[in-house]
Length: 268
Length: 344
Image (cartoon, rainbow over all chains, first blue to last red):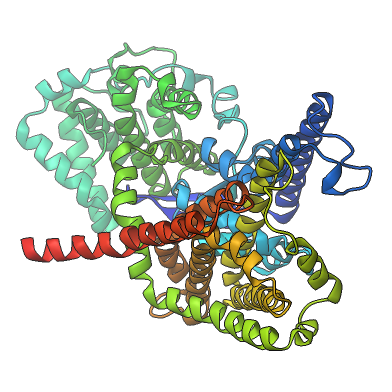
């Protein structure tokens, strides 16, 4: 695992890779979020002044010039924006504040799972230290030094910021472009799984299954020998056509897949 | 959407007979992946965007795609196939393992067990936090109370004068419209202090200790100075009602910060990161506890404390809130423990 990647193992025992968010992306997302918070505040102040619930807040800066209800609302708004803006948005859009959504970032737990409320709350309360005014952007400095780009809040909550593609994953075009045959069904699987089952008796299937599951452990030469014998038998019994130069093992794999696709598992 | 669809179709004569492993893999399973990827994109916008049948199918398709990814890696297929599958599975993983919405039973368990238990479970941190706050508080109050001029060593003269002015008059309910304003002010101010006190714990506890000592000294000095000037009665009249909840909240916030700091310092048998995650679970109910305490205290401080209701009412509120705290955070968990032991 290199430094810009997070590998996590899912409960299905497969390893997923995420690209870690780099610092410019995170700083950009943070800046956007701050801008949005400011915009909310300015909008609210304008509305309050229009409704004459608030006046003169910028004249003397003192509390005595201000109507009680309007200021109360204003104070609560500042409080809510500062502490709960990120909490709210990370809750509703599974780990992405608007700024992160725009840049294409998402917060996940260190084990790759989605955030729960507890982690969201803790990582955002520790912003108080990360945005510490005396040491500007303490969190940013810490994250730059940290191997997995965690700021202190991430450390406390056990969370990591990863990149997400905004677009859904695309099948690479060349999968089709210069291989037109990929657009049509595979030729030699003409027999349906049901027909295949009828053609292959239980003992042949047993041998086939055993071979497929153990061939990796056999010496290559021996595997090839068994495969070619078995392929001959299977081809004879099922009437499936073998491609001219198709390796015996590939052929067996194809038949085996076809067989399994009928038995429902498709895996195993 | 399953493998059989591909195999059931009649062969086309025009197709070449040989395919590479990647091609075959890709070719046979691609329709399933595409169908699944479509579902994932819709599911990302909310589980209701999927039909009932699709929701039932989702985990199975997810597992199959996982298996495909594992197989593609084992067979060392083309990197773009692996990349595509990784991305599809990662997006599906985020949907499948999304946090379930908070349901009633989880909330009920939190309110009836986790939250009340939090104080006893963290008793050491609570006592330590209380000591760190109360020692400077009582020390400065006693010292400044005996000789007011010593208060100047801790606070600026004009600040102390401002407090003296504020408490010179009897309580008169202040100006109308003031209650909502002051409530909002106390909510913002006090909860911000408490949050900061908790967050400071990540600096190996230093931020927490600083906040506790600073607030202890500050409050003790103000109180001592006002008593020295003979204004103790006016002060008590204002502070009695909300004092219990507010100070409890501050101490609990300090305890939460100390837990965090302890996890950073000690690490214990776990990696520091894991220890922090472990402690996060313990600390979460404490955060809820101090938030509730300070929020209620702010409402009392804004809406009750400034009004001349007489000492009886205010002492009643203080004692009542203390009784509630004790009942909820001490009697309830102890009672349940005794009952569980009796039942076992």
